[in-house]
Length: 401
Image (tube, rainbow, N blue to C red):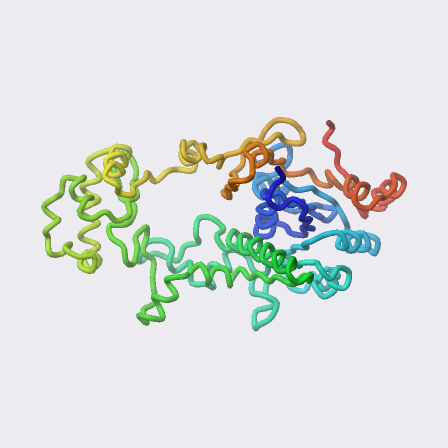
């Protein structure tokens, strides 16, 4: 059985994170991803400090299930080759800085003149129009401008960036979703279209209930630590050997912790009262949880149907039996030998056999598939491939296999 997106060809002009994450999602689901890199390659290939066979941890994280083709789009022939590929592609995705797509001639208006069915997706910081359209952006900038940083961390402390690059990751997910929606629309209309993804838009969308909270209350939300505006008990509490996270469950939490005397306390009788006296209740819970080790409480609380979990380190999370059962740690053969481990694909498809879903390919070497693409897709003879290499328009890397 073929993978879900078999037959879809994506020309991937992206680098760093948001774009590569979007194309990796599509590649995991079976699309053919041709990662078109400049002669120097995606600059995250050389990020310090940790690497495997010369490929950085950062590049490895976002580029599996892709073919790498080196093509200098700043040359006349390089651009002509790219346009040939556009004719036989379904999608072009980029996350260039403002104005670059127009300068390179890879903007949607140009591409649709070559292939009216092409779907062009651009990921930018602020979108193609508006007062900030020319500004550069990064994950941190989108987190800051959206207000999300003022929601992260402990009350009374400075704003904090979310621990993972949430704006970039969300941008990648929204881009993949938008591309698939445009592909479905094309099946109905026969026409491609432009998909615009803004990191700031994505962060505003993720604010979700904070938006309605603000407009209904007039209050500006602030950081809640690991707590919640409307749910209590909810948060992380210290135990004898670490921290435990729990979500609601009152008054059963009190019964498990052996603090039944607080069940009838008028301060904690209703959710509204518990939220009003959140500080007092959290202090009582922290003291009670501190009497036993995390795993003891996790077992006792889950046995009573209360959502509870250890606050794991990354190392513990990646060894968790449920994480491993779900294939969220995958092992791939690297092109230069040996094996690497990466985070798995969270999308599970019932009609896709496990042997296909697990048959991921490791992130490609720079230019690993250049000649394969030019030869197999465009029919270039060996003489032309050699000339393109000599002139620096393309670059090829062999695996030594």
